[in-house]
Image (tube, rainbow over all chains, first blue to last red; front, side, top):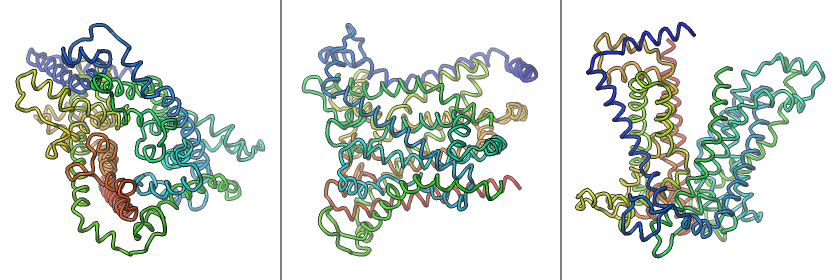
Length: 292
Length: 298
């Protein structure tokens, strides 16, 4: 570690140089900052115009500061979107899908990664191919099947489909994590008389918890972001998700610009919250992975 | 591990495999089956052999949709990968060294921000920006005196796909950037130092040192984004209606045939062809990657 720091300070000395480099240093900072401003600009204007009245928008343009922060748009669009219902649907669908998807992946990977059952390679290739399949190639038969069994326009249709689809990736990931699992622990547990189910839930699950939580976060966000299949399956207002509702929002005569930016903001906001909430879990997961 | 101990695990595969059979295998096989029929979604499908495939081959809209997917490949794979690579190295070289890790983290998070939202929401944001009458893009052009460049960005057939591509570059950039920045941690700074002393230019350092070292990550980024470019649906669906020649893509075309026309058999044909292309793409990439790895190990 000390060596590493010494190395770095040596490099910094090396880099400390004449005025030309100093200029270059700030020019490069300026360039990157300019690019960042361009990238953040669309989100900035969406936020800015969600707190304005339509009159302000028409008179002062999209770049003016709102005269006062008004939550009227948020309130109005919230109501028109039935946003509370949509949030509840999205949370319900995404969290159950994530739990079921992780469980399916866990069972599969327990058999493949730890059990190393016969035909292991065949199953792994099978799941790997499934990861790449486009949903378009499954959409119509699934639509037909779920209509037949009366699950069309039900949140459960989306939960069932995505927990299975996501489990392909989960199986693949967990199998490779499990292939490096400390086998001495398992042997000790078997000697103590653990059966397979106990082995899974008392030993494998606690030890691989970081990988499982990363997987949960992935599945949750992926499901939240889905559009194609929810568009097909969730037709009634009471079942729709946040992205679906936002995409269908039309605004209102005389309040098109501000209402539509507010709708977009309501689409972005939950994801921003998840990003902030989950960042730690993801970082932890990556660290845990690298220690292994 | 002894044979005896590895018994009793297979039973854990049962729920996963059954679910897979029901949700993936059976529908996938059914879709292929439907692609050989003429079917409106009701009544009995009529077996017509390869007619749908022949129809696709002569269908101008079919070729237009795959052409548009190829254009989206530029916006979703080619530009973000190159730009992401250059930006990652630039941040690593100029910002981390002079302003520290924290400054780099701020930039990385900022560039990544568009990636956290659903693609469809990103499309809604940009539909708002591109709106011809009150959208901010035309307003800005007017404000800086360039009103002759004002356009109906998504309504004009010649421009619509380009406008969508602009949005896609913005949306995708953060993904390769984050992956490449993580990969750069592996690169020994002394290699750069040595190259600088030998008089290598910045671009030379990137292409000769960085690219070979982070090649595995570059492959992953190219493959995943290329698959996304083949599957793209949501932005096309919400930004333009996406059923005309100018912006139609394979996924949108199959959706149209499944649910709007409906010609379910033909929709299934397009979906099957799309799947074949994606699997082919993946196989080719895997092949190139393993060959490359083998060559490097020798």
